[in-house]
Amino acid sequence: MAHILLVDDDPEVIAGNAEAIESLGHSVSRTSTPAEAVEILREETPDLVVLEAIFGGEFTGIDLANALAESHPDLPLIMLTKADEELSAEELAGQDRDQGWVPVQRYLAKPILSDVLTYEIEHLLSSAQ
Image (cartoon, rainbow, N blue to C red; front, side, top):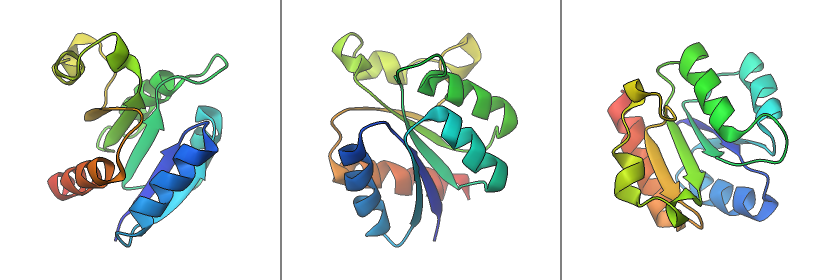
């Protein structure tokens, strides 16, 4: 099975998402900041990363996504965001990676249903093979 890295500053979101992912048989690493995620990624390369877009501090999930696009260009990324409060899912999904938008494969609105998250994870993992 796959190894998934979860990056979110909400412990309840991390716990719920980890439980859903582990129920599929995948292993999960968890962290609450993008900086900690960078440290984890120095030691291990997960099969997929699920990250929050906005964090307090200067290094955001968007910054992490851009850094990962350079250092791990084949690593699938799912971004959890409340940006859909301002942009529609179609607008978010329609952004082209080559046009300077955040380089992720999926934008999912928070709060996310565990069934939706696990479906997207399974879909991206099967597409990456």
